[in-house]
Length: 252
Image (cartoon, rainbow, N blue to C red; front, top):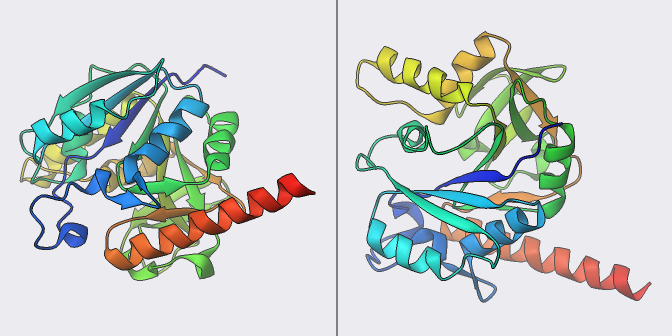
């Protein structure tokens, strides 16, 4: 299995659903149990052996870069890739990182939280020739199922993704191990859109049509997308619960 030493974090968007009317708030740095949201992801990446992180920035890019630089762990290199068309979909933000990364690379979002065990499971089980998605099959545990990116699978292969799928058996957690081929499919999706725009999901669907997307089940591990204030509250409860269980295990 080839090592995964690079990661891309997409955080170019405005984060308006969480920010609301507060123009000063930058979503990746909202405080969660006393720490910036993005710091949890950086800690997980460091523990997973990531050496270089490429931040995809756009909205308020100078402030984003300034605040992110203060959180980079010792021993980790950071680069910042600006998407000047940040109002477009997240596929365009990922495309700005083309040419910056080697395969395979980790991909995640600046507003998602993960149990560190998900990184371990993904990195142990990924196929370097495929796009690997960490998926959650615990549908009853999803905080906002309507808003979640739904996934349809056949055995370990992803056959379709989309927020409005009627038939699905898993949820995309927003953590991937990617081959460089993802950029070719995003370029194709952008071209076919007729708007010079595309989402990550658009590229995934095209790869799934070619049987190149693999689902890796996260099992009992937890994760949370943080798009709204209620999601932030739920994430704090998840982390507090995980800490309590960890402390109980240490006392046994």
